[in-house]
Length: 197
Length: 374
Image 1 (cartoon, rainbow over the protein chains, first blue to last red):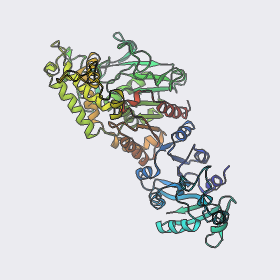
Image 2 (cartoon, chains in turn blue, orange; image 1 turned 30 degrees about the horizontal axis):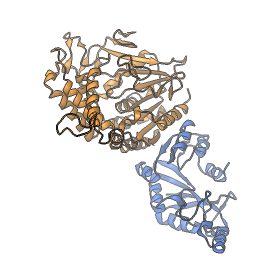
Image 3 (spheres, each protein chain N blue to C red; image 1 turned 180 degrees about the vertical axis):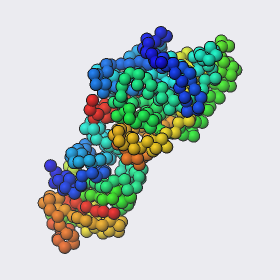
Image 4 (spheres, one colour; image 1 turned 60 degrees about the vertical axis):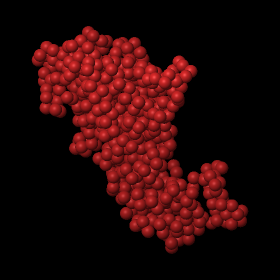
């Protein structure tokens, strides 16, 4: 099982209402449904992925994140999950504001752009492409990851929007850390935030 | 007293109900009949029944060859052995709606009180009245819980009404190209169609059958107007462009010059042969009156308790029931905390897409049905 999924399953208590934004084929939703009395809802833009979710009996709404979140009623979900997506949206600040309305707690994971190996590669090799590590063929001009950010960047934005940061995890090491006490902004590759409104 | 018999006029069956039906208008029908057809077999624990609701001009023969028109059934692409709604697996029920003209009680049937054809003496009906009658049929077939209720356009209205009125009697619904309520623009189109019928001198204040005439022109223009709304700019362009109809030059008159004119006139004409003008008035009125939002909210506890799963589908080029309307359905269902899925199918063929060969529509629908255990 993916490390971030393990962490998320540990965080979310039984009986929660959960929204997974960008749920792909619904792997995490299926895992969450195995917990007691968890009500899940997915959002996914790719129709083929939506079909896979439906075949597994999952509830999923197809469409653009911003538009769908605007349609959702306020305070509808106990947890909103956004894994590896925040860096791909046009306006991360706007998205965080929408999430704040819809959910009581928000779980967000992304790759830390200030991870020392990436920064090193960037400065030595001299290409922005080294800061991106997602899919094959991803280059600065065609990448989906248009808003790379560091742990520090995100922390500043999350506080500005009005979130409380409850926990931060180093996903690859499956370990909690306390920022800014730990040097995680340099040494953590993939981070997961557990925020509340 | 209720009795199911073989339909003497058409293939399929008729449920005869010798009892009073109170309608939303407060008026009543003292007796009524429901003409219906079924496909596939009901399984032993009666868990595989799907009710299919037809659109404005549909009938109870969605699958196979239509026994009346001899053309392929309106949803034969969707329903049949090994098709999306697989009749090897599911038991499909489809009935002609109340107010319709293919065997279910409607304005062109005899009024038992006067022994004359109803005409516009027939009470105004609503989508909920149509669904009430469908529920009576489902009860009579001894089915406690439908696996799903599925329909597009006016069919979607019935589907949503089923969830709002009888949440205990179904496990899921699929609303295709629908809305929570009829928009002002749609009411406007309906009114233009109705006026076209009623201003035809052959309409005879609705008594055309008794007076042995038919408001053919009115009904055919109504159909022409409606048919434009079922397609899209792109569909018209693709199908006809500005091509001329069997001629090289413009006629400089008002005969048919363009292919699209010929097509529309044909659509109008052929409709007159298979549809009753008064039925058209009653059914468009039922659509105009439709607004299910409040009822869904009112019955939210029952909807949630019964874990009804909703699938809401729309098409990118549908401007009669645009995706915006489906988003409204999803939003409301979310606000009441129900289980909802949705998708928008890319198609340039307009509202009619729900009746056409749209592989994504079939894929999404069968995926959703597969996710519901028998």
